[in-house]
Length: 369
Ligand SMILES: *Cc1c(COP(=O)(O)O)cnc(C)c1O
Image 1 (cartoon, helix red, strand yellow):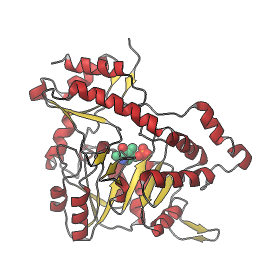
Image 2 (cartoon, protein in one colour; image 1 turned 135 degrees about the vertical axis):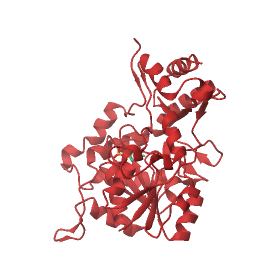
Image 3 (tube, rainbow, N blue to C red; image 1 turned 90 degrees about the vertical axis):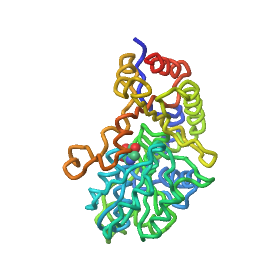
């Protein structure tokens, strides 16, 4: 049988380059606590993401939790059920109440009209997700946040390097979280960041990720431990040097998929492709409409799995259908999200996916017709 193909595969720098990057640690013995690699990576990423402040974290989820904590919020946070568990868990673990609004069926991001309809006197913030790297409707969301005095905080885990109207995606909103998990476009093995414009917020996050410690004799906040270590930061410095190659490889694979799949009845690629958007080729989400395609998503998944190709049902189930949330929520209240969760399949896309492999995946899908 052909070698197994997974939905993603971590990008790695040349082995020798990484060894060279971490070698100085054997002299300094400085392995964590905002060392030299950490500082370099923050500066490089601020440049790349076009934002004034980047605060690194041990992983994206803790970055999100502490980003929410830093805003001292109380009450309800409007968010999307069509995301990874982390988005809602971060709200709940801050003692806040998630309120789910429905998504735009074309790009899967929060529908601003549904956000507005979900606002109550208890709403304190909006937490949208640039899902699959699709920019949210950032201008409409900002207008709503401004009109109602709400914080606008983005889960940008999928949107590393995406720009909208020539601006880094993290320039929108009050703050954004990025994930540098091994499976993401840019990785530090595990890792994440919060970006913001406000130097005071950077300072708060610096303390929160280090137990709330202000200095040797003062602890000012109930913080956590979520500092990125030097070995992680070194991986980031190396991967950032090779990012252009990684993106070019992903772009070529994505375009080859689109050549095969565009115009096939019942097959809809859920990516915003517009002049104003510089994409990052992170994911290839496809919705299969069983009426038109003749097979449902689960059948496509099974047909691929039989050939040792493992797509993923991102995002199924909806977060509001999880065992830990389903008692409190009714997922039929977000019908677009519900339908997408039943129809979507994220196809393999990663640096080094070969043209022949893309052809084979598409052949299996198109042969089902
Ligand atoms: C990956 C991801 C996270 C969490 O990031 P980790 O680095 O894995 O902790 C949060 N939200 C979304 C949408 C993600 O895809």
